[in-house]
Image (tube, rainbow, N blue to C red; front, side):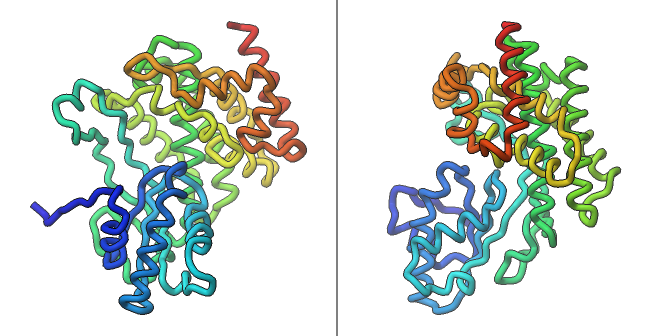
Length: 337
């Protein structure tokens, strides 16, 4: 058994002490919480500088977000003294995390509150250029020279396919609970795969030196096989909830659409798949909707276009055509219910 210990995140001083002396750290708290932990990391880096001088700390950003390094760097600078040598002191390593971890059923948590289910996939793609110190020789680490391409592959194939299956599948089978159930419907499977393939074409155009057509198709088929893993018990609720993040202007759907527009490529299937997210009403194990999604749905019904602009970050002019497409799909979906 390795030497493992834990400290409470509520004990700020202890966290600062531990991080300041660490050889390497990883952060995985989710996009919405990341901003809240950065001040503690900044305090630890400042202490590290006082105690050890220029001794870089590598931070693996195990977050499901694009441009994570830029986000963290900006917030670190805002929380450190003016002129602090951030670039010399900190290595920010973006990642592309492909391992799926479902919501643990309440019955299992009652048996063991620390239990975690996960699929066997154990490759961590990360930015080989982000390290300040030598890259650790750890099995499963897969450093890449162009991490942006791989982060976009995760967002615009894995995350996009996941959400497509959840949103379209839920529209056809609102009673279904698990992802594998809806992917047994060939209509759901076919649309999901075609949406992923359309996005793969966009990625291949954007990153011709990083991907091949056959590699991306093999990746899509492997993902679809993993999505249908019955043992994982991954729920439609988990995959689809948090609509204001997953439908936002810089996430899986709109990020791919913006890339398509940049290279004058079609995105019709992607915008169609996205439209089903605006009527996503899957519930958790206790029969509840994700609370912020309820507020979002109410806002949509009151003023669809303003909600896209104010809540999702759409640009009134640059995204005008996409807004119109989504508005038509939304109206059609409402008329069908």
